[in-house]
Image 1 (tube, rainbow, N blue to C red):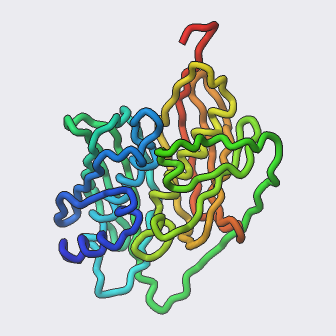
Image 2 (image 1 turned 135 degrees about the horizontal axis):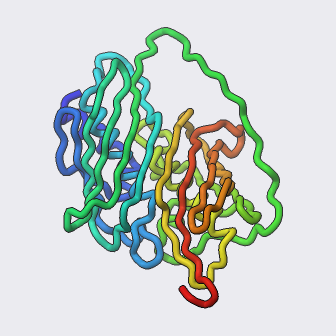
Image 3 (image 1 turned 90 degrees about the horizontal axis):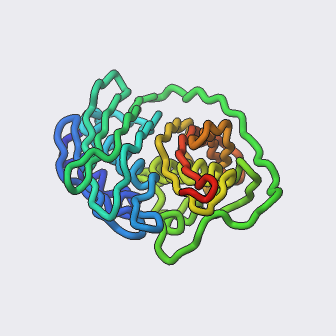
Length: 291
């Protein structure tokens, strides 16, 4: 794919426009995208939501991968893995993500993505694996075990705030159920959440996973005077979908201020697994009245 073709395809990604991501530079196996600060991409207080950062990383990596794809065939495109480390918060500032292809195999790309802020300070690092296989006339091999969700139980009071400006509200994430250490969240599959193929965008799924892991941790904490942030997330994307989804998160362990949660995201009706991963979250609670 030429650089111009990659940019034209990127322009069809509804989710990129939904966030406000634009292309700054693109070349062979390299891409730079920018996300201007917008209040509706942030949490309360102006800190960019971790899901928006993960989305920016995925969009940059995808664009870089596209520049090395042979479009004479009909490849099946998908993100395989995404890992994000959050080094510092992005507070009311524009962000710039640069993606570089570290290695390109026959149909798989290994990418490194660096996110910097307005003063060029390092904010986040991402590693990504992207695939573009051409199956031709061969049938695709698929093994899947649809899952079921636990029925709503315990405290089902909404765990997500609903201010007029908030990223979780923007992507329409809602609470399905909650018990201490676990919860279920829902997210609709609507056009602004989709990629250029009309499928639920991996960045939107990353946002749901980060939010689920975050609030699973908060369900075990005393909110009075507490503060927290995502340290890192890791996702795998077994399948694409064009359906509403449900995320089920469970805290596996708490080690003092660090919470480790596993998250599965499945289609709401069929229970097909579309994403799975883990969230590492740091939550600082007040001790004996001392913040």
